[in-house]
Every structure is written in C-alpha cells, then in structure tokens.
Length: 263
Figure 1 (cartoon, rainbow, N blue to C red):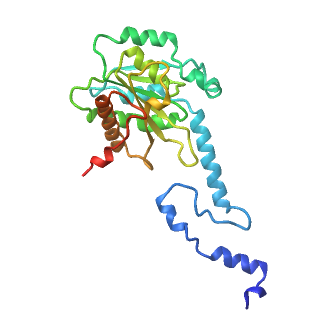
Figure 2 (figure 1 turned 45 degrees about the horizontal axis):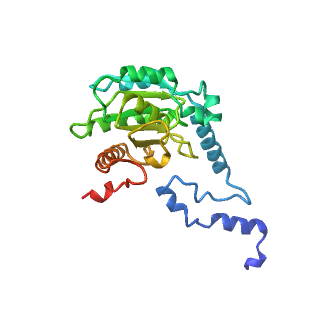
Figure 3 (figure 1 turned 60 degrees about the vertical axis):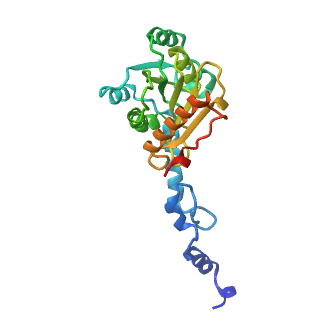
C-alpha cells in the first residue's frame, strides 16, 4: 500500500507510533518536552499532568507557613535564637496584591529587633521568609541553615534566625539594618513554576539597609531536590559571603566563581 492509499486513520496511527526523538531527553530535565499528541491535541495523561502542576503551583502561593513547626525544627542543637517578624501586609490576599507592603517591616517588629540587637554585631543574619512558596521554606530552609552553620568559617558571628511572614526579599534589608548585621541572607520561597512548586532562593546582601536595590544582591536559585543541592548551595553562599567581605559589597560587582576553585 502506498502512502497515498492510506486512510486518515491509518496515517494517524503510523504517526502516533513513530518514536519521538526528544523522549530520551526527559530523563535529564523537568521541562515539558516530548509531550506527544493525540490528533491536534495533547494526550490525556499530559493534560492531567499539566492540571496537577498548575494546581500545585497555586496551592504553593496561597499556602501559609507553619511557623510553629518551623521554629521547632530550628530549635536546639546549638542553633541561634529565633525571632519572628511580619511585613506591613496584613494578610495573604493583600500581600499578593501589594508587593510594596511585603518589603516593609512592621514598625513594632523593627523596634523589637533593635532592642534585642545587643552589643555584638552579627556578621550574618539568616531570614527565613515565606515569599511566594511557603512550601519551599518548610521543606528546605532548615536543612540549608543547618548545613550553612556547620560550614561557617571561623570567626563569623551569626545573628538570630528570623522567621518573616508575608515577606518579600527586600524585607531582609530592614531586618539586617535593625540588627546591625554586616550581611543578611534571605531564604525565601520562589515563585512556583509548573513542576517546581517548592523552589527555594537565597539572596545575600552586604550592609543591609532599607532602600537597597536588587542589583546590590546575589542570588542562589532553585534550591531543591531536583535543582541545586543543599550542600552545594551552602558552600556557594559562604564563598559569596567571604568574597563579598574581601571586595566590600555584593551584587553586580560580585560574581560566583566558586565552581572554578573546585578540584
């Protein structure tokens, strides 16, 4: 039978049975590739997977951080003291509509941090912020903090661990300023993608103070099991912090060259 003699159904069957050259690449990426097709549409299983991924992303954005559980996981074992703060956004709905409020620290929390600062100036303060994925903070922040503390260079003074609710990245500037810290590292839930609802980011800022720009920060992104491993993220964070101390700042002037120093 020639190709011209085939019925539409037989031609569609032959096309569907043809191997997709992209299929093998799915073993190396979470990207939505080699999805196949059913006629002019996606196969049913891929449509269902897309719906699940979209639902997980939406749930991650609206999910509340379990502060009590997080604080319990952080306590004990020589961990620094824990403090809790909130942004000026009163609730999740307002937080999502008003990003500017998520960057402002409540005045009463700023005053409490200043009163609690003490005489010792911390070199680095960790801020655990819910951001756009509390799920990411719940899953990955504690292991990352523990790994980072275990790898802390000699002589670095670590300030209290600050849990921040309804927080954007810039809220860490106000926290670091109130505590008089030389550096602040904001561990925050990143905006969920399809298939990555629990991605954690770390933003390092030198001499934190209100009004710092994003260009004055360094970011480690996609920290999770399918992305940047915890141990690698902690190592990179300390490389950046120590290099920032040498050159006197973070941001565009600081490039992550930690991988070049690996044997």
